Image (cartoon, rainbow, N blue to C red; front, side, top):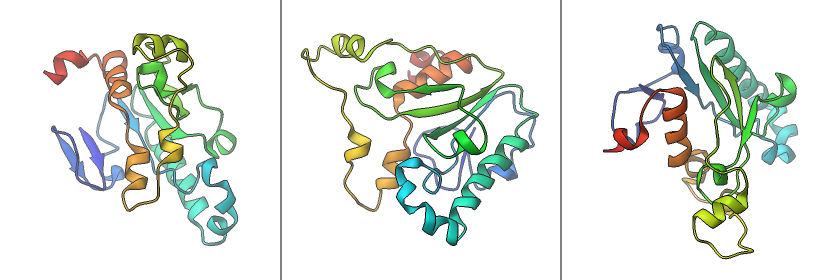
Length: 183
């Protein structure tokens, strides 16, 4: 089941509401993608203002509350971009890039894990991904997220989990055959 304050974009069971309404259910696996706008180092130049009005502290507290409240779940992960959680909490267990899973772009994504092994990438290097995709020698992974223009849905597009990463999570940690699931 997915849970978000927003409606789902994908078919399947979805709870539209606060994750803390359902976190105490006896789940066997959970993936948490808490908002990062106020804790991501990409917005560090705004930390002073975010500390003054409390957004910085509220964001970190929400993340930590989720971590504490999810300890009864046997396995799962917390996802965040490079953020203050690496210093306020601890270093992530794994940092992945989209090119590792066949999306030829960059966006460092940190994963804090429990009860699951590190995700096994499809490609060990960006060059392996480039070759598999048939891109020319010298082509660099796109910095699409970093270059995304301002707009009303920028926050949502920047936070979207790419399909190949979601498929790897489902296959490796959820016991789901992603190809079969998509059919």
